[in-house]
Amino acid sequence: MSTIPLLKFSTGDFDERERLEAWRSAIAPMFDIAATPDDPKRFSGEALSAHLGPVIVGGTRVDALAYERTPLKIRADQLDYYVVRFDFIRGADNRPVDRTPIMIMDMGQALVRPPAAMDCVCLFVSRDAMDAVMNNADALHGRTVDGALGRLLGDYMISLADAADQMTLEEAPRAAAATQALLAACLAPGAENNERAAAPLHATLRRQARRLIEAELLDPDLSAETLQARLRISRSTLYALFNEEGGVARYIQSRRLAAVHQALADPDERRRIADVADAFGFANEAHFSRAFRRQFGYAPSEIRGSGLFIPTRPPADDAQITDKDAHTRMAAFHRWLSDFR
Image 1 (spheres, rainbow, N blue to C red):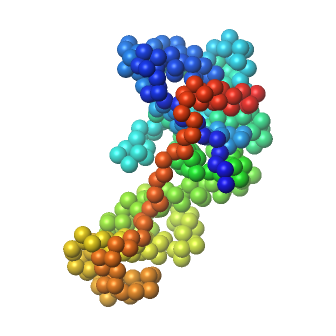
Image 2: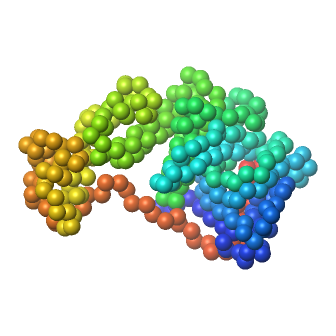
Image 3: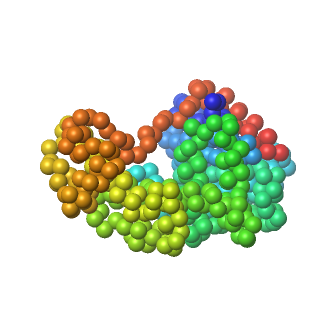
């Protein structure tokens, strides 16, 4: 199946003397650069965008610049869409460790942004797409989303950007519809909007919970209670996330067994089976052996040193970039935004 259109832009594709001007041209459909860095030759910026139809999702990392969208520019380009922007600071695992409230910008209205480095994920949403799910979309300019809703929306945006390079043309309309529903629930809470957003909210919480479990498999205190506290959700909500796996405790045990399986299959693993099991929370050797055989159909000793790994998390693929010419990619992104008119 064909994947959705994906574009990458990087100042690294240009000579250092041209990088700032290349970035200026790249963001020209949106902003004027109101102030430039002291040393343009050291300037760096990159952006990755994926087109879902009525929604474009993109990630941007760029050095500090000041941006301005003036009434004159609005009249000149006549672009008509919203930008939902989530800025954050990345941790060692590339996930957000510090975040700012999500900001909504109406590109039909003036805006000034002071100089600041940018590391963010953005949703570009056509006015028709936003109007379709909200009655007061014209009042969104300058709005922010914080708290639990902001955290959920931000994590969803990151997940959407991460999955974009593998998304097919057939999947794109469903992803765009889920995104619209989640935006409506976060920006204009109400019974109808909340119902439409239930599925993407559930999926986002599920990804958060699974990611947390993978990171804490060696923690003997990992439990439903600790997950509930870390995710700040109710007990019933947490259990609903793992109904298909038979509950939270069973899912945690399954992931720990998979981790033990991978460790035991490693030819370089020299610890006793009981010690490996104990490291992942299985203090009772007999209980561990029964659970292991029940999950995999054979005893722990049979996998020892075989090299037959069971992946504990999905592999990360590189972005699918096909067009190597930076100017061509820049022009394509301009056309994407123009289609929102």
